Image (cartoon, rainbow, N blue to C red; front, side, top):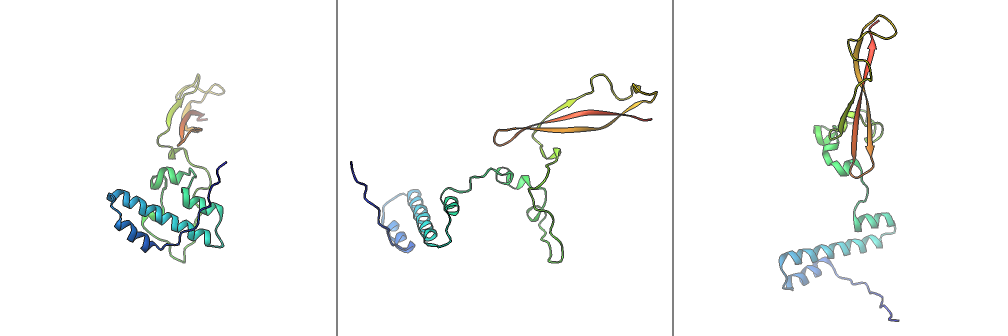
Length: 167
């Protein structure tokens, strides 16, 4: 069985790496790619030397963020307001609101959702109430959002018709 040699750390500054890259006869795209690899290597070595380095932080540096949050998927489009949209920062005297991302997302936020209207089986607005002599009138429909588990999100918005007697 062949023995794998352990690598030895290379102690070069970024200036020395730049000088080597300038001497190399490579196309500009490949030179830029090697420059980025060298920067990543130097950054990882510096992080490893830090006493407070964690595995999570090193993984984020090497591979990037791996979470699928609404902010990452939709970008600025998913935010309703805030400093990015309004351009106003809060002064020190004002209270901060709730943290973003907590709580119910309203049905209106699912703009790309398929909409399905669900009418009442036998009654409609203007009919006589089955329990009294009054007339039925329409009410704001009840909304139900069904989210299918695929990335990003696929949603169906059901709007159930609601009726109310006027008496």
